[in-house]
Length: 198
Length: 184
Image (cartoon, rainbow over all chains, first blue to last red; front, top):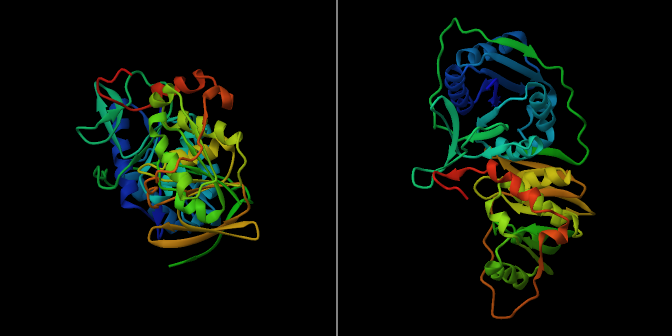
């Protein structure tokens, strides 16, 4: 297994705690299997101080490499129509064996379509486990547990419920490589936001 | 507005009926045909049932490929689905049809041929609009009420009728999470 890609959602320029939990789990798996953890984070353009803070937090939470995409489009709530092209383009570049994210209303909009685009397996409400030095993706509780078995030579997309794993804290020496993605989101013409209200 | 409601998860129908003339499409075992009868009784103008035993063992994408192939044989402006537990089917069907989709939809209306949608995300309502064809995945909805005794016509299709070969469905079996010890 070469690459794990974790989709990081953020609010108020801070990663969601649930995203950090998934990143921590990906770190544990990658350390066991010798893989690289990529964290993809997006949002409105940040000043250098806030970007430094964000990347420091993701480094300490387990990322080996951080992919940063800033555009005003990404300040809106996550959905496939606005964010999907970025995520698909990243997957086509990295060809990750596993794409995982915290289960949120945004990732629920993105995950199945991304998986369908990639021809990937989809595991929702996922457990990410190591069994006999292999990654096993499971869903369901102990009685109704289902899992992907065998030698998996295809990509997998997994959504992990909040609170399933604890975040990791690697300490101040952790320093991930940061790469800024120069990705211009395509103009949406079919289903466009009007205005947000509470 | 011609609406195609995917009723496998059962709960999209009431939204579909409010949006326009509704055809219900179910990938259901024939024994479950009463679900489509109930949809007709509730107001759907047409019901289409597609079944093949291979569908039981396929994954979300095998289902989506089948639904999309079936949808292409029907006329629609909107596809309406219920999210269910995982929201896997609606977005995957949208991918196969190459249409925009939106999940978390709590309300939709049609005005002058344009679709206006409300989506709930993180406790906030967000508004979108778009021109059909679109796929809308509703976050909730009531189940179809039981059908009265009156029988309605339900069209039955097989994979050949929608130009699908079994192999296009069966190869996805290995992508489906299985119960431990399940070899099917």
